Amino acid sequence: MSRRPFLTLALASVALGGCSDIEPARTVAPAATARSAEPSRLDDTLRAYLTSHGFTGHVASTLEARLGRRIDRQLADLGRQLWFDPIHGLNGDNTCGGCHSPTNGFGDTQPIAIGIDNNRVVGPDRSGPRNQRRTPMAINAAFYPTLMWNSRFFARSGDPFDNSRGFVFPAPEGTTLSHLPNLLTAQAFIPPTERTEAAGFHFPGGNEDIRGEVVRRLELDAPRVRLPGRILQREPIPRHGTILRQTHGRHQKDKSKSAHGKALP
Image (tube, rainbow, N blue to C red; front, side, top):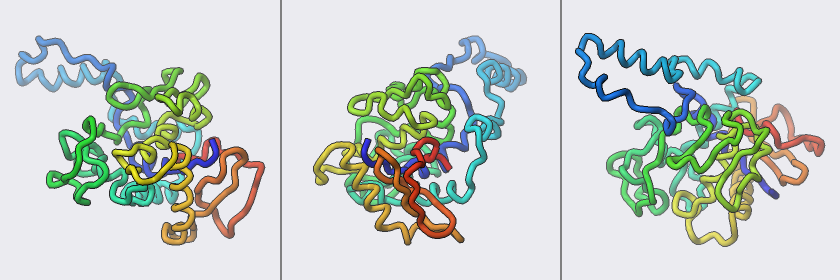
């Protein structure tokens, strides 16, 4: 792939604060008899059910161990800023936070998502053309081995932090994002290319062209996206154009570096 916008900064900053490490589609509802349990036993029944499915309430504390490195807090803060910035939506009126609202568990405030051509409101009063489905919650998405309502994005290994067997997406991406370090990072390359969600219908070209234009806009706007003592800068990557990341000091060119592992904060 020729150019790769690291919009993942936005996704990672929030989605990695998850609270569950199991896939919702694979959970099984409690037996019907549990519904008739006495009120005094409901807490025990629920606690036992959650425990049996791996809920501990402490999954966020495992993130750095799963990643194999520390989280860069300043980079994560940049991600939070980009989450609410429509710069990576070529239609200019939607961003991650437009559908994944922090007021609703980083999920949708609408029964069916509203993407481009919206009224620039997030919440019950949001209006505009409807998409095909409701936006899923993103708050614990980093720990899921499959993503989306129909699990059409998935890690073949069954572990979202293991790319050894590849990450699978619908065409045209297929398995071409499998070099990225985890499933959520790979997934972050998809939303900017969705015409009804972010890109709109005026920009010509395919997914790679859209990603390249997003990178160009981010590079031009880099001075505005700034954190104390650090600035968003470019870094040449062999075979993959340029990526955006934060560096100390002046811009440096290093053609020996790889795009692997650069996406999450």
